Amino acid sequence: MAEEAVLEFLHQNDEIVDSGQFATQSRISHDEIVNVIKSLRAFSFVDAQDIKRDSLVLTDEGRTYAATGSPEVQLVNAIPPEGITPKELENKVGSQIFKIGRQYVLKNKWAEMGKSLVTRKVDTIDDEVRRMLMRIQEGEVLNAEDVASLKKRKLAASQTWKGYSVKKGPKYARERRKPATDLTREHLQRDDWKNLEFKEYNFKAKGFPVEGGHLHPLLKVRRQMQMIFLQMGFEEMPTNNYVESSFWNFDALFQPQQHPARDSHDTFFLKEPSTTKILPEDYVARVKQVHESGGYGSRGYGYDWKREEADKNLLRTHTTAVSSRMLYSLAQKPFAGQRYYSVDRVFRNEAVDRTHLAEFHQIEGLICDRGLTLGDLQGVLQDFFSRLGMSKLRFKPAYNPYTEPSMEIFGYHEGFKKWVEIGNSGMFRPEMLLPMGLPGDVRVIAWGLSLERPTMILYGIDNIRDLFGHKVDLSLIKSNPICRIGVQ
Ligand code: FB9
Image: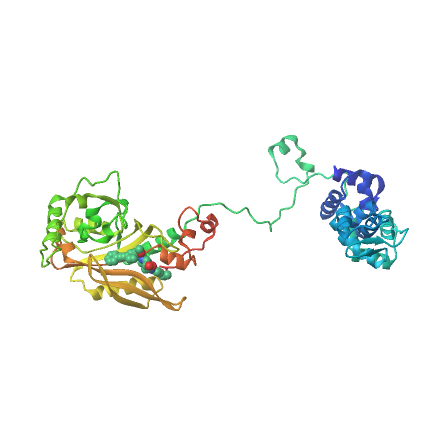
C-alpha cells in the first residue's frame, strides 16, 4: 500500500517534495512512508534527501491551558467579590490549579493571599499565557522571550520533524518485484525464470543457531573423572541400583547396627519393598559372627547382631555398598588384583544447605591387591588428584567405621590460594575383607569424593540448587563451557 503509493506518485510526478505533506495527502502515516522510503533507498529505487524542521509544540499541560485558560486566571476568576478562605479556594479549583496558579497570581499582584482570606485586587485580567498557547496551536511564531517563558513553565517544547524529499533512483521501477530467493520448479515450468531478478547472496549472514543437545556440567565432570580412572587402569563398577540392603550398605562394611548413620534420621529406609530377600547365607553368618564376637584377630563389637536389621532396604548412603559387593564377588574366585571405580548417586537424610542436598554423586576408587600399604594409598591419591589439577596434598588422620587407618584429604587450590577438603580415604578393615573370603595378605586401599563439589568449583557455582534440581536455569545447561580437567 504505502510502497505502491510512493512508486506510483513518482511515476506520475518525478518527485515527492515533502514526505510529510505526501503522507497527509495519501492518508498514510508518515512513519510508514518513512520506512518505505528507507527500504526503497536501500535498493536504489529512490534517492532521498533528509528534511529537518524545528517547530514549537505544546506539551499536554500547555494544550490543557490553551483550552481552559491559564491556572492563574482560573484561580483569580474563582475568587468571589467578598473574598474566600485559601482552603475553600483550593477545593474550588483543585490543588493542582491552586498550587501552580498561586505563584503567578502573586507575581502579577492580581490578588491578596492572606492566611485566612484571599481577596481579588484587579477587576479585569488578560489571559496572555492562554493567548500565546493558542497562537502556537495556530502555527504562529512567537518572540524568543515569550517562547522561553512557556518552555520554562513546560507548556511548550521544541520538536524536530524529520522527513524526506524523494526522487527516482537508478533502479527505479513503477513496481518493486521482490527478488527471487530460490529457483523453484514452478519457475522452470512457467519458464519465467529467465527474466527473474535473484536476490544477492549475503555471505556475511549468520547461519541459524544449530539447536542440538547439551550436556549438564555434572555429566561433563563425570566424563572427565571416568577418563582419569580409565587412564589409571580402573574398571567401572555396576552401580545401577539405588536401592540397597542394609547388609551390603552397612553390615558387610563392619558398620555396627547401633551406628547413628544407620538411624532413619540419616538414612532413607524403604517402606515397600521394606526388606531384602536374598543374601549369601554363609557369608551373612560370618558377618554376624565378626560383629558379635570378632574373629580374624578382632574382638568384634560384642552386641547381638539382628538379621532383620540387615534385611532392611534403603537408598544407598554411599557407593561403598557397591564396592563391598564387588570385593565379595572377587573373593569367590581365585584371587587376582583389581582396580575399581564408581561415580553415581547416593542418598542421605541430612539437613540441606547451600552446598548440600539430600543426595549427591559420590566418586569412589579402590585398589585390591596383596601387600598394599598406606604409602600406596597416598601415592595413588597424589596421582589421581594431580590429574584434577591439585598436586599439593595433605593428609589428616580421620575415622570411618569400615577403614583403618583413615585419612581426610586436603588439596591446595591455586585459585582460592587456600587448602580445600577434597575427599576421604582409608584401608578397608580386616573385619570387612576376611569374612568375604579374601586371602589374608590382600589389602584394599580406597578413597571417595563428591562430583558436585569439584563441579561447583570448576564452574563457579556457589549454590547447589543452581547446579542440580528442578530450579536449574536451562541456559546454564545450554551455555556452560567444556570441562578441562583430566586432559593431560
Ligand atoms: O568432594 C569433596 N571435595 C572436593 C573434591 C574435589 C574438588 O576438586 C577441585 C576443584 C578441583 C574439590 C572439592 N569432598 C567430599 C569434601 C567436602 O566437600 C565435604 O564437605 C563433602 N563431602 C561429601 C560427603 O558429605 C556428606 C565430599 C563428599 C564425600 C566425602 C567422603 C567420601 C565421598 C564423598 C568418601 C569416602 C570413602 C572413604 C574411604 C573409603 C571409601 C570411600
